Image (cartoon, rainbow, N blue to C red; front, side, top):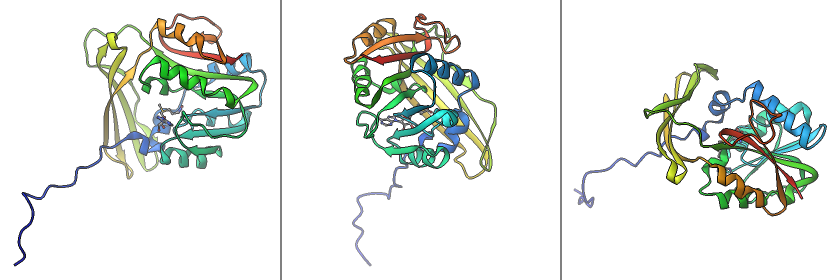
Length: 264
Ligand SMILES: C[S@@+](CC[C@H](N)C(=O)[O-])C[C@H]1O[C@@H](n2cnc3c(N)ncnc32)[C@H](O)[C@@H]1O
C-alpha cells in the first residue's frame, strides 16, 4: 500500500467567486440604458461635438450597451475592456473594433470625436487624482472637435435605514430564460467618499448560474472633486449636467451627472 503523504483531509479547490462581467449577455440585458439616458447623451454630443456621424470610443465598454444605441449615427465604433468575454461579446453584437486592454493604456491609432463612458466605471477608481490622470490620458485619442463624456456618481441623500434597495429590475428575458438584478446600499462612509454595494443577479431557465452575488466599494464623488477636475491638463470641464435635464449646464453635482470635457 502506498504511503499516505497528505498532511490532512483533502480540501476541495477553492471556487472562484462568480463575477457578472463574465456573463456579458446577462449584463447587457439587465443594464441596457433607457431611451431617456440615450437621448441625454445624444444631446450632449450634438451640442459639444457637432452633428453626427461621430466616431465613438467606450474605454471600458462592457457588453457595448453604450455603443449599440449609436450604431446608426456613428462613422466608427470602438470599445476597450480588460475582460475578454466583454470584448468578444461587444465585437460580435455591435461590430465595433474592440481591444482587450487596460483603460489607462488605450491603443487606438485614429482619434475619436467622442470618448464616452456612461455607466460609472469612474466609481471603481481609488481617488480623484487617478480619475484626473485617466481623463488626461484621453487627450491623444480625441479629434480636434471631440469631447469626453463621462457619467460620475456624486453623493446624494442616503436612506435612513441600511441595507436599502437602490435599484432593481423586474424579470427580463435572457437567452433561454429570465434574469433580474438588485442593487443594495449596505454601508455609507461619507468620510471616505465610499459606499459598499451588494449586487445580486438571479436567473431562472437557461444555462446561467442561478445567483451571482457580489459586494464591492464604490467611490461617491463630492462637490470638491468636481473642482479638482477643472485642472486636468489639456482639458476644460465644459459641462456638468443632470441626465434627466441635459440642457441644464452647471447642475449641482448630486447623484448621477454627465460631465463633458473639451480639449484646449
Ligand atoms: C460598469 S461596467 C461599464 C460598461 C460599459 N461602459 C457600459 O456602458 O455598459 C464596467 C466595465 O469596465 C471594465 N473595466 C473595469 N476596470 C477596467 C480597466 N482598468 N480597464 C479596462 N476595463 C475595465 C469591466 O470589465 C466592465 O466590463
